[in-house]
Amino acid sequence: MHVLFIIDPLPSLKAYKDSSVAMMRALAGRGHELSVAYQGDLFIDRGAVKAAATGIALVEGADLRGHAWWRKRSATQDTVLSGFDAVVMRKDPPFDMEYVYSTHLLEYAEQQGARVFNSGAAIRNHPEKLSITEFAAYTAPTLVTRDMSRLRAFHREYRDVIVKPLDGMGGTGIFRLREGEANLGAILETLTDYGTRSIMAQRYIPEIVHGDKRILLIAGQPVPYALARIPLAGETRGNLAAGGRGVAQALTERDREIAAAVAPVLHGRGLLLVGLDVIGDYITEVNVTSPTCFVEITEQTGFDVADTFAAALEQAVGA
Image (cartoon, rainbow, N blue to C red):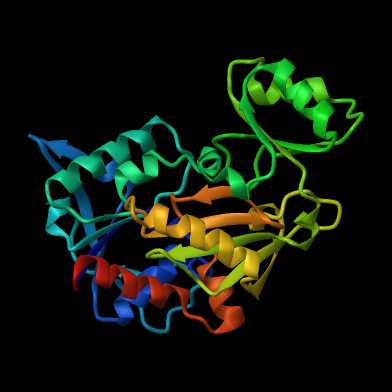
């Protein structure tokens, strides 16, 4: 099986903990061939969706904390996406218009026979914060608006709320607004850009002190362990990028209930890999672009997440 990864620049990846690298290592370990391309390498030429793709090989025994963990296997070559057995979209956000255009190109490539995971249309149609509204029975009270008066009314009702931009990642732009917050107006004006951008407000979930859990769904099934990202003392955000500490733990009964409700729906729409963010009993985000935490869960539990993904990819393409 020849797999193309659409990915961020390889030198920028922290290979020792990067989930995409873990996927590549698992696939290589199962005897599959790898190529990579960057978002800017995607193009349409006379109707055919192609990529300037470079074949790579992983260096056995390499120091994953360095940069010499991979080498070029073949020269960069323009190749139709349907020429690969699988295309794995792992480009990180920001989810800007270039990203949207990329999802369209991937969708067109699928119409030409390419096998894309996650599919372009599925990524585009499941904005990671807004998607939770489809599963309202499993979410805390949530408001999405750009209207300042509605945001203020939501804050008055719940007294302790989280507000965040709809296009952020890694915990950027997240604020906790307690009752009596002196900077309420300034924060809301900044996040909404004076009422021109919609944001999300959610009732604060106090169970965040026990961690913001990442639950991975692969081919419609939950990985049996979540990674609880526990905030630093005095911090609201559990994101690893914001200094959170990752602790792997077995799924709870509630976690499994949520996964059972969500996983089949999303898998049926072309989402092979999904990362649910769960705080306490509630989903807070549905991550479909480049879900992470493979390495942390594997190292702490022995459950090989990347190999599970590789097996699911093989099954999805009939390899």
